[in-house]
Image (cartoon, rainbow, N blue to C red):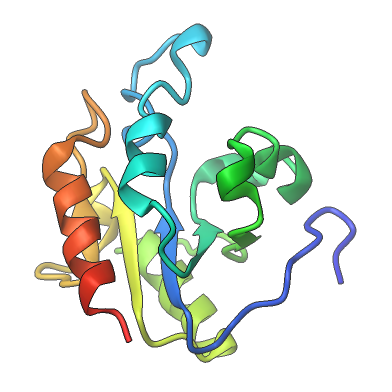
Length: 152
């Protein structure tokens, strides 16, 4: 186990949310005091749903999993189980990183909350696309709720 990224146990059958930060939890051009300003919307949308969160944000390259977890409210910290692996170079990089993680972990029920449509093939039914200049909004929260309502 990598000391930089102390993982929680990954549940193969759990619904898994792959979470980007920039353009999702705050606008792309946010100042540091605006970081994670949209996080309360995500926290509310997830409620008590049984899911795990894997951080797919590029922030994973600059911080440990423990430090990334600490950025979240207590209600979400235990759900954050890991980060995706090494960067993929090439077309649809984020999608390749996520699908490699899913294949290695046996995950089949997942969604990605991201603002970079070019990081995913089109169409990609698992992508919940945020407006990067704003971050997560009601439309994306509704899409999360619909997915979680149908999760097994």
